[in-house]
Amino acid sequence: MNKSDSERIAAQLEKQGHQAAQKLAEADLIVLNACSVRQSAIDRLYAKINQLKTKNSKLKTILTGCLLKKDREKLKNQVNELWPFCDFSIKPKYQSLKTAYMPIMTGCNNFCSYCAVPYTRGPERSRPAKEIIKEVKDLVKNGCKEIILLGQNVNSYNNVILSEAKNLAANSKSTGSFAKAQDDKLKGVSFPGLLRILNNIPGDFQLKFLTSHPKDMSDELIETISQSKKIAKEIHLPIQSGDNQILKKMNRGYTVSHYKNLIKKIRRKIPEVKISTDIIVGFPTETKKQFQNTAQLIKWAKFDSAYIARYSPRPGTAAAKLKDNVSNDEKKRRWKILQDFLDKNKNGVAKRTK
Ligand code: SF4
Image (tube, rainbow, N blue to C red; front, side, top):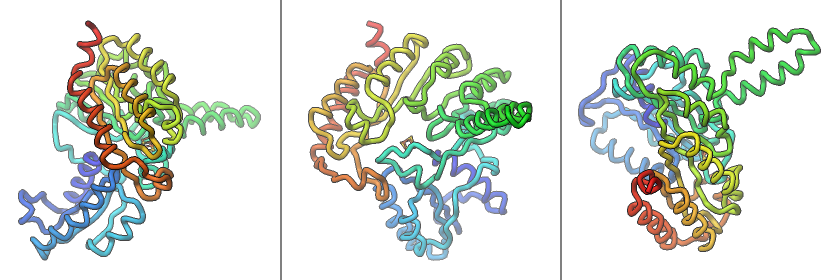
């Protein structure tokens, strides 16, 4: 998402008459596009800005991206300008002609307790399907072979519009404008519906998407992936923890058994599927037993790949109010146990078929 934002920032700068510098020393303006997923990335920004200014005192610095209000306040005097998020009306300057990252929505309404995104990117907003379809058609026409649809939770694409349309339809039965409600509903095509439309665009290209949320992964979506030739058989489905109590504290909205049922269903419908996941170890109050539940889940699921993160508090989130009581050494130990297991068991698909 950050990379995609940068492509729109680059397009905006070019529109203003700027040209990309080949070396940092040649630049007279630099845009720092922040990412708030980890506090360490934000902490490094302070040093980075100072380092840039020392090297080139005439450099104009602009800061934008995924930043908490508190960090914006702290950093605003260190840069020349602060920019809001680059909006979707700007056509991106794609860095690659073969692969395009295309946001279909931004923001998030889920408020997982450890995550800063709902505070930095705000509430979930979906781009109109019409705009996305046109952009995909243009990319394919220009030879793009791989389009990666992006959203914090792509499974809930247009959910806000869909529920509004439903309410409108319910109310309008009594007011007599049912036909109008049906028109409005058309505006709110769901994620599986959007995928089917994109799958039908002629051309030789593949569609991928990131990220799915286990609580919103519908049977319709699984069916659509299995039936659509152009959709890659790859699903990134973050579990985060294999323990129900920790999942509850993370405010993830599903249980381990819900997740396991999803995996079973996906593999039944799409036997060649590759499933990857995200895991956080050392979440506040996570006991050794609770960590073991995550380790067992990983062994059971035989993921094709997994990204394991050691928990670090993000100021302003609900989890940051909990005592970060798992020591760094213990977080490292838990991380290593899972990473070693994954390294030894690469290619889960091959192992599954044995
Ligand atoms: S679903 Fe949860 S982890 Fe993902 S962006 Fe939203 S709040 Fe963050």
